[in-house]
Length: 295
Image 1: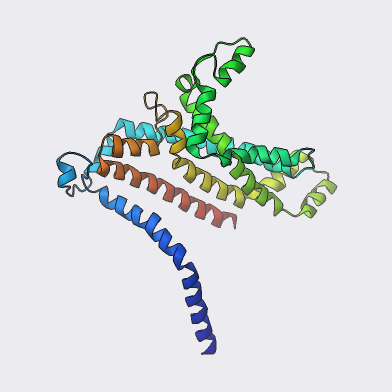
Image 2: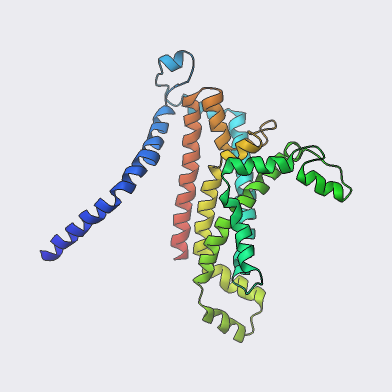
């Protein structure tokens, strides 16, 4: 009886402590998500008759998605953007950075500061910085570099738009990958490495047979966080290309914005947002199932 009373008191205290966070979560995450689901079943708009008298249209917006080539293009662009920048670029460079920081480098502090520096600039500011480097003409930074090697300068954001936004987003996300993967590396006991070396394992075998398997929970967590956050990237891509040219960089967040606030079709934009939310939930469920297998 005394124990039950104590546990109830502790539970009430924990609920009181967590209540501000729960209220913020309800106000800025759960309520907008639920309201988006509601909007996706209406023809809500910013102009026209639908703005004055929105009505319930059922699954019409979702039916439209199935036949919308631009929507499928945005999904394909988002897929390449996530795979290229988050899963390949940020992960590989972040893992290399994490491994290097575990060694006794001469300029370790400078190296880590350079990697962390991109996070100091907001998305839009970083986007405009890269515009000055990737713009066409002889005065752009990248054009000057290629001219130094005798190559012809080009407008990089027009010629290689998707590749360029992948490069910029990779540059911006290396620090997050490095921090998470460094934490994963620090959990591996040094005795395991010493035993492997005594058994004659070379560095490649140690990495493949020890480091990667023991880091798999951290890697899976990083993959989930990076994939979901990259799907939601908006400001960086909008500042760089606004989804162009010709939809080549119109990731799903840009497509949602264009449908909602350029085409003024809030209901249809909400339907696209619900699909993006569903994709993120599927990734989360896949992560939980993968973690159960790992454990």
